[in-house]
Length: 437
Image (cartoon, rainbow, N blue to C red; front, side, top):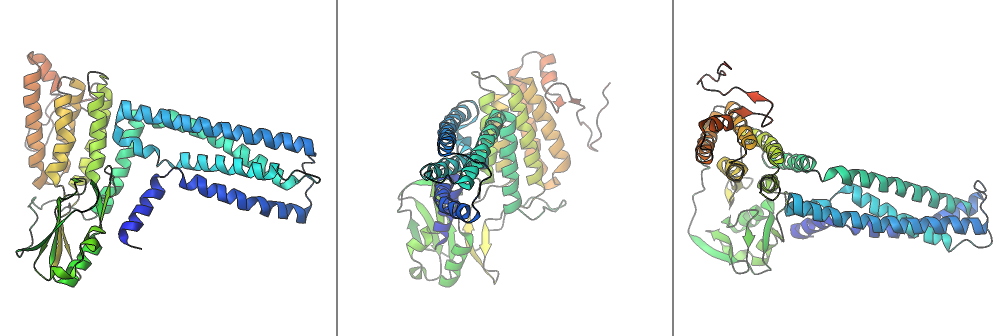
């Protein structure tokens, strides 16, 4: 199986709401005969149900489980509407990846299917053990339904969703950028490999879509065999249309590389994912923030809470060596070139839209001011220039947004909570806070 098929299968299993319930249906059909066999071997008499009582109990349980299935899908549809309308359409996919919902639906389908297999076998001798298993499975499903309701009532609050997205983004950052950034190393642009002339250009021949991930090892292997350098033109997260340039092959013998082998190293989809795209996590958080800051919603507190998460993520990224965009073979020869976001890209993505949309909200500007001061103290010296630029832009934005000098001064104060946790501004080069007096 190729890398692309493995990736697609993994994505389908992660996002599909049908895979686990269908598997549980098959498990219930297999469990029915097995439990009946055990009942015949052990001759259970613990419950002592008669035929009429057993039929009534199992029939009622199966009907209740069917109702739980209907309610669960109603909850999911409501969650999709709330998430897309109040937070961001980009988080709708996360609803279908929630494990608790998949487990609950699988339990409901298993209980319903198993109850039907038991109900059809209540004849002369009442099978006591299958009825006991059906009762336990249905009670377990009811408990899971209550858990789903509790989770649904709290999971789609903005602060919970922001925390979950930030947690997933941290995991991607740790995976893609495992190496620390030396504190004294200046930020230098990555050194590009010396490229030979373009020997071949490969255009995308499949359906259009967003670049989700690339098989770096596979592309390096293809380039090493052909003795060439492969340049991947789009960046992960970019939209790739049919007929657009996707690969450039420099030097070597490009005739030995089949175009289909190259395209099998690129996964496309309808929308971005976090797999190899940590900037998408920033995008989701920023989208939630600017929607909260829109006049229709006017919720600056959610905007400040989003900045909490962005502050932490930038702090984490600031201490990591970001991708160079060059992949090498076992001999150290550069074989694959691809575009990656740099530190300035992440900073601009995290700050610009929130700064512009929240310019007239002192709560947002004060929280941004504190984020800049915090990051200027903790990120390596080579990465402070971007923060200085953004802080200066924030000051100019506030200058344009407030006519009154006192209001401008209020909006420029650094405060971790926006209002209520004022921190002194750092004025001295030594980093010592100025006096509060």
